[in-house]
Image (cartoon, rainbow over all chains, first blue to last red; front, side):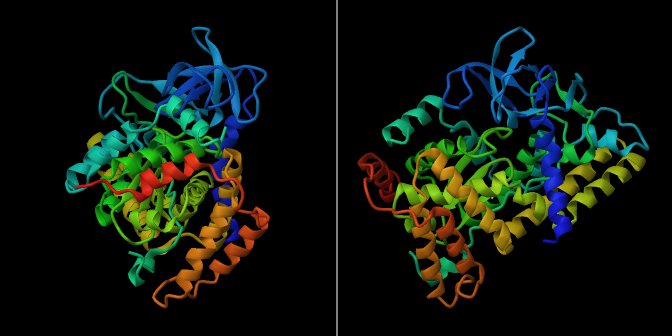
Length: 159
Length: 292
């Protein structure tokens, strides 16, 4: 890969992760994954106190440590969330239609509302019926619990 | 099982064809998130949701090609080991967590697709000798994912520019339904490119070296020694070079990777206390095949 290409790639990564990593205390951040856990301490092996869902806003508090942010929810609960679950980009709730009307002549707003999603996958599946997405659904459900992972680590004398 | 043909695919490349996501549309129950504001197009492309759905399609294509190993015990063990290692990497959260599965092929293959699906072949499980070696292989895959190597691949494919062009054209000429069809076409192109890149081409030497470096950091962060991963790498590269049919037999990156690994691991000793529990659970899950 050329040096330019590498720089572009790095810039793209930073565009996503850098933005949130430099978020200041008091700034509003948004959950960018389907769901993530609010934890008592800055560790994945720390007890979970709540589940945050895609699009939910939190406020970054002071005292964040490394890749872990101390945050508060709108209802006041505080805890720790890993930075990779958050974005500074504002996610706007739009109740609604499957194919909301799109403005013409404005490419970026159109793309903003139309990304690869479950709907895209549904269309793809319809054209590729031999592909086994049910197996992938099963794998997602098999994600081990925090307790199981912690037990795995302890039994293996890793923690 | 580790015959001549088994080495045809020995490439730790795997892929994290992350990508192109124009973002936004959600799959959650109503109310539905439809729009992202305050971001550039580049930012939106790389949000986790689009990466997740692209990666699922890529994983489905790879599973269709190699087959799915239904050994639930091995899969459960991989999920525990892999998820524990995920906690030590720099990208521990994806749109819907990480997923681990076994491909039903004697070839030695490993893939990681956007959004966090890690696929290891039965041939690879037959080739590793301990939990520590297996942890190294998984950590290498996680290294590709955290390094976002797929973005580089997408960049080379020009899919990114295609997507931008698509957005411009779509916004100018089509309505909602037509836009969905155009988006599907772009999606299919991205999936095809990603599968071809992952299965047939693999990553560059610099990407492999970086993934190895990441693997060593992940292993140590999780409490594993990195020496067994060096041992495994030496062994499979040596065996590959003994096989003229192997693509690695003349691959210049093999020696460079071993040299770099020796440096990053400090030629860490693999001897010493080995946890009997780790040895037992590895044998139970990986060496013991379910009957029937």
